[in-house]
Image (cartoon, rainbow, N blue to C red; front, side):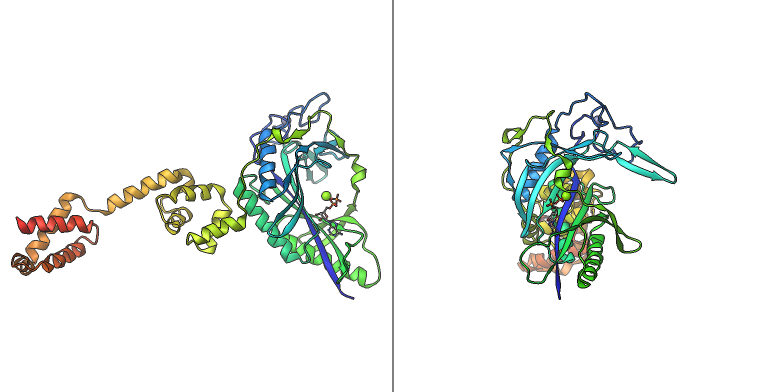
Length: 422
Ligand code: ADP
Ligand code: MG
Ligand code: ZN
């Protein structure tokens, strides 16, 4: 009997905002002293009240739109109740029945939902104790959930890479897996080949720290499930971690169901209506952006570099009014005038102008070079005097050679003519 994998993805990205989701604490706490970026709200102290972060809502809408989602007219925050030491309130403010975006797609992959929630704190395990750092508590987090539409690990990986490009390009998140601002979960089950319905279970894979590991974790988990099913057994629904070193998955806990969380609307926050956020024009998908770059003559490799770096792409765009796409890409990607992000498009154009001027000889030097060419080529001078206009072309050629091309040919011809006619 042959089995076919069924894979669905859940992706979390921290939203790039100045402050946290429901309080004024800084959202970027990378490398900060533990528990230094906290306040009564994100520490879940009694009586503290949340105030939603408008930018976080707008960025979620932006991403949901770019994923061609339907944007909810009515959306609400809900409490997801569970106990864990990194969750001081005893619930996470999330969205369940009223997500910001639903029914989207990216490159043919169906997106179930895009919603906004708050991040939890972080547990730090030291030899004999566990410490908790609440700096991350309350950082805005977007969750993107796909339908179980992938039938092999490689296509799941390809999708994740594409999604990351879109997120980075939109400036919604750094989506940096090493810093934890992008986190992946993969759900996988096996069905008999050709079967139409979904398997009655799924295994959620956690602790996946790279796109490569997503593929690996899925592969080993698929083999594990295959073995069980081939023996006539059934796979239990659970959450499993991926052990990078051993290349295996291990059971973490049996999977809870939505009803275990006792979701209910967050009473301290009003619902979001479409008036709460700006709905923008149609957004370009990575595919469209890539095609635009390729049509400008950029190599595939350069197009990908720009897709993954929004700031660089903006500088590149700023150069297009004055430069060919290829040249502009060369300058920003190869840092021809130094760090393009420090220079900006204007700085680069200025540097370019200076370089062009520097390349041309000054008027005095041009005149001197022209005089030398005239002195050294008396035969051509007499030819010119006797009416052979082509002699001027020859002299100009000599002048170009003499000055290593650092002159404007029109300017050179004029100077030569003046000398000859004098
Ligand atoms: P939960 O509430 O447990 O997170 P969801 O129904 O929201 O469950 O699904 C979460 C993820 O699991 C989605 O990415 C979805 O595509 C995927 N999924 C659902 N059913 C299956 C299945 N039978 N096999 C693999 N993945 C599945
Ligand atoms: Mg889930
Ligand atoms: Zn706070």
